[in-house]
Every structure is written in C-alpha cells, then in structure tokens.
Amino acid sequence: MNEPVHVPVMAAEVNVLLLANGGTRFLDCTAGGGGHIAALIEAANRPIEVCGIDVDPVAVSSCQARFAGNSAVQVAVGDYSDPVKAALAFGGGTFDGVLCDLGQSSDQLDDPARGMSHRFEAPLDMRYNQRSGPTAAELLNHSDLRELIHIFGVLGGERNAPRIARAVIRERPVETTSRLNEVISRSSGQAFLQKTLSRCYMGLRVAVNHELEAIDCFLLHSLELLRKQGRLVCLSYDSSQDGRTKNFFRSRAHPCTCPPRLPVCLCGRRPDLKILTLHPEYPSPEEEASNPRSRSARLRAAEKL
Image (tube, rainbow, N blue to C red; front, side, top):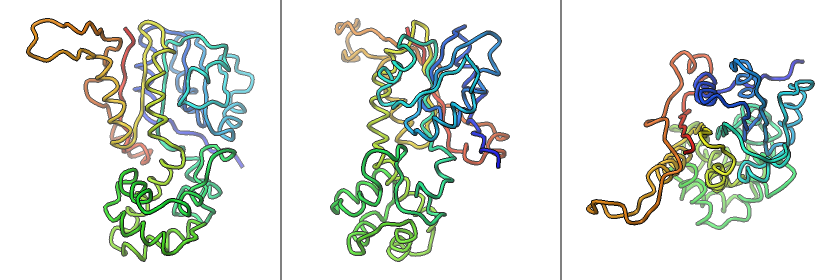
C-alpha cells in the first residue's frame, strides 16, 4: 500500500512569498509529510536548500524516506516552539525564509491510534509526539472543573463547556474516544453534535500539545533565524492561531509606544518587520473544492527589515 501523500495548503501562495526575495535557504518548521517542501523545490527556478523539522518522530521518518537521496533536503526531529535550537540540527545559521503551518496533520487526524478524531475508536492520546507528555485521557481524568471548562470553552470554543466538563468529572474515568463521545452526546444533546464533538476534541488537542504557548514561542524566536529581507510565512486555521500571528506582526511592524498625540516618536523603538499581507489570504475556491480541509486556512507573511 502506498503511503499517504501530504497535500500542502496554499502551496502556490506560500511559494511566491518565500521565493520572491531571491533566497536559497529555507526552513519548514512543521514539515509533516513534506508537502510544502516538495512544492517549494518544484517551484524554485534556482538551486535551493530546504531544512524541515517536526515534533512528531513518525512524520519525520516518513519525510526523510520521501526525500532520501535528495541532497537539497534535510529533515530532523525538532520542536517549532524553539526553532533556533531545532535549527542546530542543520548547523544553525540563518534562513531566507521560514514557514510554519499550524494546521493539524491530516495523517495524524486520520490515524486511529492517535485518538485525535471522534470518528475512530481509540485510546485518547492526541500527542503529536507520543513519546513525551501526558495524554488527553490523563488530562481529562486529572483536571479540575475550572481547567476542563477552559479546555472545552476557551481552547475549543464550545458554549456548553461547563455542562460537558461537569459530565466528564461525573463519568470518570474517560479513557477512549467512544467513551468521551458518549459523555459529550449525553450532556449536550444531538443538535449540532458533530460540531460540538469537533470543538471539544480541538480544545483537548490544543491543551495536550500546548499549541498556543508553542505559537507564541515560535513567533518570538523566529526572527533570530531570518536573514535581512528574510520572510516569515504562517498558515493558521482558527482565530486563536491567526490572532497571535496578526498581533505579533503588528507589534513588530509598529513598535512605537508613544501616545498618538505626540508629533514625534520619543520611545525610539524601530520596526524590524514589514507586513506583506495587509489582510489574511485565503485558499482559492478551486483549492477548497479539491481539499476541503484547507477551507479554514489563513495565510500571513512579513519580511525582516
């Protein structure tokens, strides 16, 4: 059986942004199955070097196999929340472009053993790196009511979070996807159940993998990896991810903290980013039709000054 091929989201738009500055060295901080790496190499009209990291050792092994024998590609296990440390696997240094695709890997979502989808019967794991950290089941069975409400309501965006959280505590232990589905279904009813399940699972996944904290760390340190006029490209899939990217870009492109009424800047802060996308870019209707999982994607990019 052939291995699933990673379909990169908004690859054409990503390639235009990364390749426009004439650079030759790039870093994909969420390499996954290597879809964006392959698309970037194919689109380049010059020799380039692409390094890829991913926190998931299984994804890294698959990506390494995909590019075996291609000297232009290097892939290693690394956490995008600390991209400077991760880049040491490739000798460190700086890059002409850095990409971070914050979406959940389709391969991980479709792997029943991960327990990331309510569609498959599986133990509740949800870790991107299954070799470290507590599982979703451990989080569900040891968190208090306030923590569970935060997971379902704030991280997942589920309005019935308090009721679901109380049901989880009442019905513990909750160890499998089918058990969690049953608890959520009984506590929230059948109306819009699929959306409720998706939101609760998303909140758990974000909590287990500390995704929002990882995004903040990545953005903070990403500029250290960029050469002058190097480009930072981020793909987000929900408002929390996109909001963090947007606010970071704005804070670094407009760092002045002086009151607006002052005629001149007195704080002395100077921008170190130029925003390339005044508004987020979205997939084309054709891409959404061919790859429905791209529908929520939002692309933002900036250039280091």
